[in-house]
Image 1 (tube, rainbow, N blue to C red):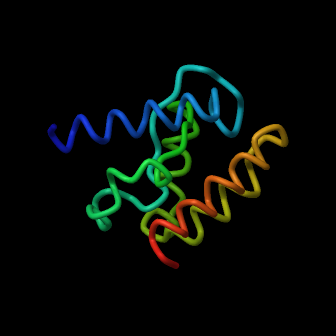
Image 2 (cartoon, rainbow, N blue to C red):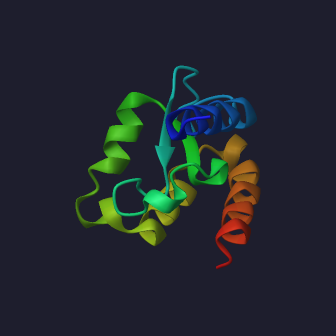
Length: 103
């Protein structure tokens, strides 16, 4: 199995778990990496590192000035802008991510 197919599977699992964009609920979503794949290639296939965001919100999160490369700020942005109906799911998702990364 290729790395690309592993990333695609992780994106599908993320989308299936949440159902839609964490910020607006739109069903057509991208898989957004919490730890960006460029500076953190070792985490790009980890399912808990990927959350579903619509294209608009994915681009918004990727263009947060200095936040782009800082996972802690990206996590904070997700937690503060996430729709209420996804907050509990996101909290569990992030606990799993920290467990996998041993942080």
